[in-house]
Image (tube, rainbow, N blue to C red):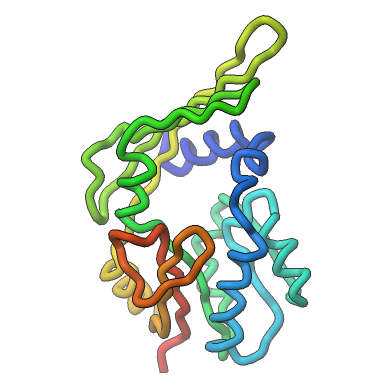
Length: 206
């Protein structure tokens, strides 16, 4: 099984509970951070490709902001996403920082939600920059007098700022702005250690 197959299986396993488990994330506020960069560095277009849209919460939020949204998640078509960038368009995306991986997955964590327990930890410590991060999630859910367990592994890779910029250049793009994200709050300058994610805006070279 490839990493892509394993990641797809993991998300399909958690799909019925994904929105509930991420309920604390303010999707509308996070989308505002994206829109700020789109409005500043784009050319006023309102067509938007939501790559990695998951259950569609972000797509709905973008649509409510007046965008014509096309959303898709894990599929072969994702490899061609940059080819959909129109002249004058802006690519906005975020990447988890190495600090986030270390804080969130560096030590085993258990969350008690009454009839549901969620546990996660990294299977691949120590977590290093530009390395694969394998995390394990276990969901325990009460069913009458018994408990049901759903287990999954997520295979992710950290990409440092230097790596992201080099990849963008190879794809014919130039990073024009970055913001550090702590939950949904934007910070400058972006920092790999203290921030959760780095939000990027990139445009075509030339």
